[in-house]
Length: 350
Image (tube, rainbow, N blue to C red; front, side, top):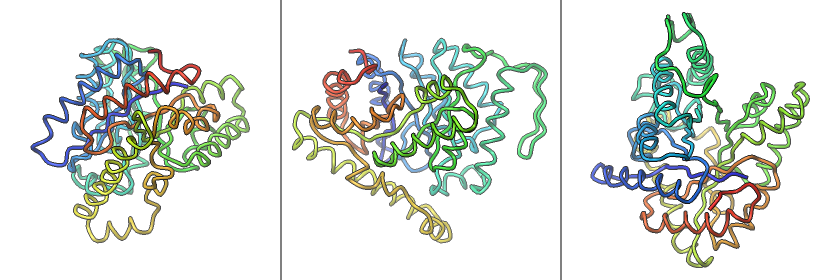
């Protein structure tokens, strides 16, 4: 099981943006030193929930400051990007990084309506836009004299320059928030990323994913490869003792979730808040029972056993929760790499 660091740094005020961005670059370098497999980058706008906001630009900075660690998106919101511009940016960073890019794509957040409004995009069209972008990206990376006449974009492309470093193109993986979208990936024989869920839901959904893939006629080899390339998200904080981890980690986790809701309450319209109230707003990721793994290295190792037994290829770990100080986060990163990861076969090499 592979372990990776999800750089999702919060900055509550504009005055703090520079420091948090600088610390995030340091965290990426530290993650490589400790042997983590991937640095994952998020995309959120206007609220400080993700200080660097643009994963493509930040990926280029990380690619220039690291040598081996892979760089992935969890995820880039496809409705907010012109597909050809995005294809060019990925190709450039794939060259800068010498083939370390993983292109994680998604429709975008379900309830941060203000992000879509800021870009002049109808959130109800975001999923269909995602599907069209996925098709354009692959063909832009692999086809000369490519023409596309779609619902949202009409493009005519002689040839994309620079060409992507990875052939035929960088791996592309979609984030799935619900069961049906997960099963869609299974039927297509594609890996996926799962957001924070309970261990029981994680195991059940991965079993359904494998079963649906087999029923769709995919070979055992394809099923195994797709599982190895799929990822689940967990929020984790490690300290020397359970008591210390809970004292530090839990308040920052609670503040992080509260800050997200405060932004929605402040920036969404009344109608958008009503729409949010009719849906499920991440029950698992909001709860202390399922939303965070916190404790000593021994406790965290025990909590990860069910994820390991599910057979999923990797864990996307959000270590720096909310406004957590850099030093506390760095210590958690080190403890995990040195005392948790070695307990799992195929884990981080430290």
